[in-house]
Image (cartoon, rainbow, N blue to C red; front, side):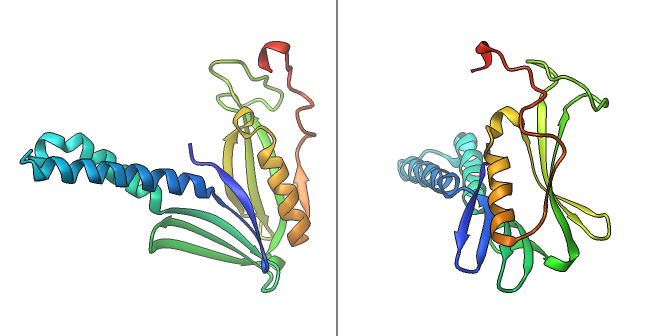
Length: 184
């Protein structure tokens, strides 16, 4: 799973894919490339190792994948960058265009607002997004609440503290979840 974390810079804060994800993918790609090169040098046909080639390409894609949101306090801009290596799409918004940072909750698979999550089918989800002044909503991250473990909420608070953008949370943290001893 691709995880995001905050990185504080001299010019602001960014919310990006973790460096450990890139490092693990790059190391796995190097290992697979070494295996491919060793087998190819021994005369093993590449077509017999197509599964290794596919895994190599996937791990290489993971190593060069970019997904970041940069909140630049000097230029007063929010920049979204996503894509692979140099083939990235960039969108930039001025702080004046941003109404607020939003954190909303929903239960996957249910339309009702008061739906309760269950263990298997219906999972509690978090949507971290950027609401613009023209009522556009730019989604930063959608993640299961259990997987987030409070990291998304704390990242939003850190971004709000550094950038000065207003925050909105549709409900207090974990107030309507039935947490039992088994969940811990």
